[in-house]
Image (cartoon, rainbow, N blue to C red; front, side, top):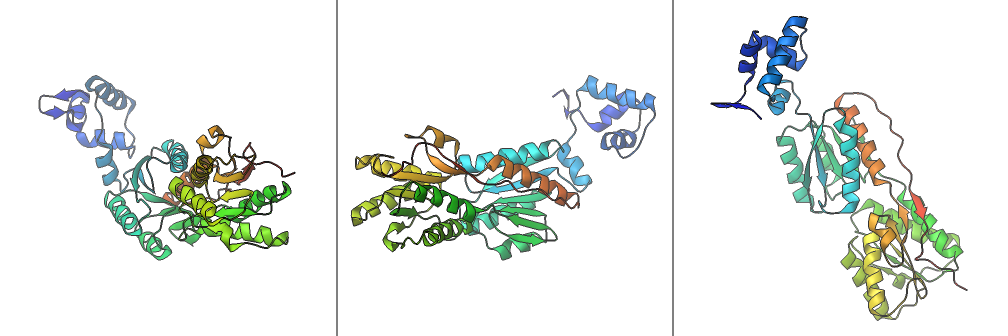
Length: 337
């Protein structure tokens, strides 16, 4: 950026070069007043000659908006969250908004602290991508800033929370395993404090009941949505002597850990044990073998979130159709003979 001897080019310097008052130049740049064609050309020429870069934050504060949206994610390195954030960014950038992203690392107190920081930065709205904060905390924050939350059901004047049909998708995954002849199906749970984890477990149990398959409590093992949790869960299953021909992991990361645990015991997938995951992360099509899983269209989720947020900021009623989950059949499941 071009600077004067005393620093960056200022609005006053632009106004002087254009032969207009600073107030006229300011109103022209903010779009709050019309100016004559001659003055408009003079201001535009001065901006180009001086390479003037307006202070967007300062302008936004004067107008009561910073043109930024805060995003609370749980991990800055997870493909799961990254896809959603790209969708949000693409949805809001055409309206001139930028994202300010922070991570809560699945700790409720840290999540609340990050939302406070975002509000302190004068963001125009906050997106919450899952997490462990209570609904009450989120509703309290919505009194101060519009909020869109993914992974929970919330509705209010300045808050909207939604989740996808995890239960129905889990039932569909279980139907595939049962159609392939599997009856002894292990389930690796997700985090106990996550609504989607409970929905997926309910889908597992209800589908067994639908087919009159007696559930074995020993085949339901704790997990935490992480690779290490899936690894430990399968190690626990194998150490207990449990018999199973298939594993339904509550997410793809857990399935990756489960696959590693089986590999270390020389148990083949899918020849000896079939595996289904949940999420359809990019890497799932490149595992050995490629993972059968439930696809969450997370980019589309992010796009919906961004559109909803723009509507809330603009005080418009926006109804966005939620994307559907779908089963992606690859090579990690085989039919029992």
